Image (cartoon, rainbow, N blue to C red):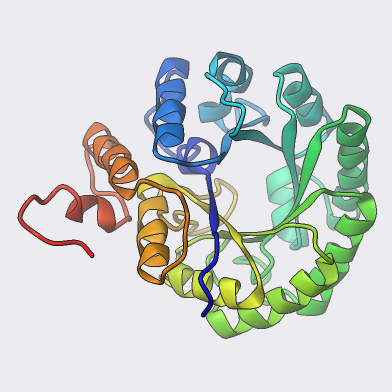
Length: 303
């Protein structure tokens, strides 16, 4: 496989901590963002603009966005699920928003309180609003490879949603294995078609490691032409509205594997591992990522 520049978007500040029982203060989040940037990450999703009662960890989304020490060469984005969220993101000063809907009708109703037809109409409205304000819009499709409520999601259905998103005028396309159900053969086949249909628009893969296939799916995604992947420090993450949802693929683990394969990420793995290690100590339990524990050992070699 030819060496590639692979971009990792850090999701730990949003997807990573949204399920945790321990509440992080605005100051703690800003310090984490600073550390992630210092580790070489150039894209960070720092908040979601959702109802604070449903996702208490995101209650200070505006405060975080306004307090962050922004660097010119780093993309700071927020997740939105409706027009109210878009307006909050605009008011918070972000210029990059991720508008996301589910390919599963059941998950859509649990996650956004909308059936699929309503969600698609709302998505167009969100994109229009972003475009009117000059924002870069990342259009996301959740549960693209399977749903814990509905089971199999038809690839043709996902491709229809991809075309819908592209017709809405998105700037980037994100495909999410929200449930961690994808397998490498399935993913490579579908993503090859999606990359072709996208016709040069950046395609992003958001992978969860629920069934321990996340890293194999990174490899499959690269084979399909994907060059941007969502990851989270320590392997944190999970959706409050998906049964048995577990974390994202770990940033430090993904970067380590990619570096071994000869790809370039610009990520300082040791610094990312230190973040995961500190979080593990703060939370009082081992995180799902693997490499952060190895980087704490002084008498072993890591190649």
